[in-house]
Image 1 (spheres, rainbow, N blue to C red):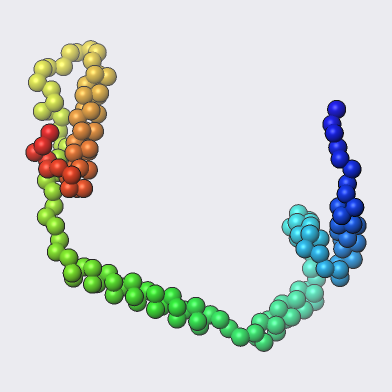
Image 2: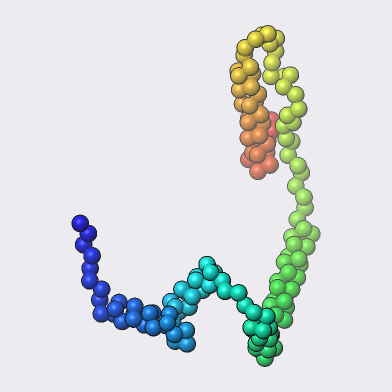
Length: 154
């Protein structure tokens, strides 16, 4: 059982305006324009060559009468890019490079295993030991790059 409300007078008037605008495209209605656009996208009509040429000519002629704003946009973006480049140069010249921190190098797993491997089994434990060691190296490298602590503090 659903409780549906009766439409208000305003809703009835708006639906009538929409119906009239859909029937007569010359009437101004943003909702009708949206519905027509969706309908055209779903079921596009084919244009004959004459109609297409007329639409292109009309569009191009209207474009030629309007002032162009592209020059202003290019000038603004060009000036912004120039200021950004100048700021980058000042930043690079004004700061001395900091010495690179000493980072852990992960090349071999030989130092992780003193005992000999069993012929069968133990693979998961070895992989876990390698993963934990490399995660610790990565964490220490992050801390060293951030300047939180040196590589020697462990």
